[in-house]
Length: 183
Image (tube, rainbow, N blue to C red; front, side, top):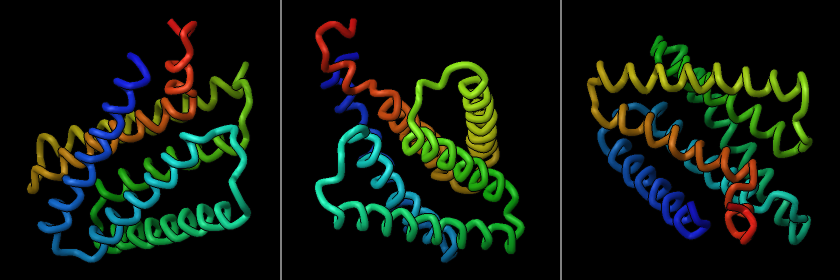
């Protein structure tokens, strides 16, 4: 895949997610679901920005503070929504949100503690992420088969696609695709 094709794919997936989130929010009647969706979109924007510019310094201390504030705000709202799912006993949402928080924790670790990921460390990271993504695929399949709202399933699959893009950003796919010797 060329860098241009990757960018088109990435921004198409993001646009579809935003459209789906808007439709999802129009049909949801709970504050928890609204807050959860909006905070995840904010966090996705932050992660896209951070992973797209890996290895580059912040332009200013202000930029760094804005990114940190947006991340902390998003995580606070996401955890508030997660607690709401627990209170409301929406167990599929609890498992799904817990797995996404785990994926985010691993990604943050990979972004801020970069390394070659060799040996046991690499195996543990891969095993952890495989398990978390397996849980997320299981939730997406559950909503695909047994969704009261079909947008739940679409939402789950779009989020998986979005985080696949973030994963590719972390591993520098876009930058490798720009190099002529990347074939």
